[in-house]
Length: 462
Image (cartoon, rainbow, N blue to C red; front, side):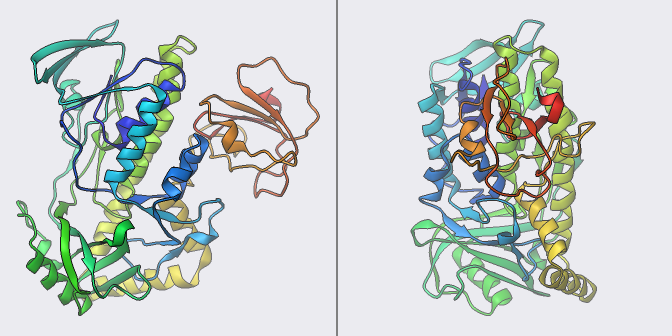
């Protein structure tokens, strides 16, 4: 059972179905929310979608943005320097992202049950019993494993007794999806100063997302919803214009609370996405880290569920993804501090860091790799590339790596083009790369995990 039909739960369900695992997604809401909390899809997430053959669905509709920001600094990181076929972020309302992911999950055979609120659970050595409230009243549901993808207020996390330590909100940002009669000339705009900072990003269908913060948001603990007049006022104060703002679709405030689950696994209960980590909305990373959680967990949970791997494999999910959550809170906290640096000293810090992004390519690229998710690697002894993301290698026979991963199985690559097919359950492919890949030129054999990371390299791969 997957609890929560947001992007993370839907993607996890589809991943489990690749191995034929029976999976049901339980969602408390009877209809999806019309509001789009996370409109940004980062390069590594696009790569993951390409590994499953659905990237084109997102590329066809989303706005491509070839740069990214760190802490709202006006000097933006150039994603063109990234080693990926997708050197950009996609701006797409989360509503549409969820629709595309639900389509993927249903195509794969997942069951999605809406209006089913999980109110408690009890686990034992053989499975988990969920208590579910629905239109027909309460009932018990039994599952071998349960994954909580039910957000920062996760019922699954609470019922499993998993601690969620961290800090409460003391600062608040705001966002609005509106139409602009006088949009920025370059469509993407970052503005900052002592009155606050903000970013304007285009969305499909003529909408724009305005997101930012200002000194009036510090210390507000129970913010009310924004009004159009309030939004106009704060945007004009920061940018000197309201860009002809009209026809709001959604306004909201968000805090800088930061929390991380003490463990991502408690017996037969696991957590992914916002149920595992809560943080300030900086750089649009939340949805992406959640999808990457699900990609890491999906093949492992499937292998355990169908009896191909021992239960202990699930421990590696926490071991690999919890450090990513630690890093997530670290850099979103750092960005929040930068975004709310309204003093003269804070503005000086923003200027210095902005100039480094603009003038030191290695610094800019390192931040971009971190924000995009391309630098995530899992600890492993031995070869320095173990645990790292494997790029979409192109071969002389016209094939590429990512399409070979579409079945959700490991792929064994022989890059010499000479070896005989070994006896392995992994998809085997022998071909010579068509071009040089930084860091991978001397590698002869790679065992690539279903999530696209290197499991074994050279002689050990065979």
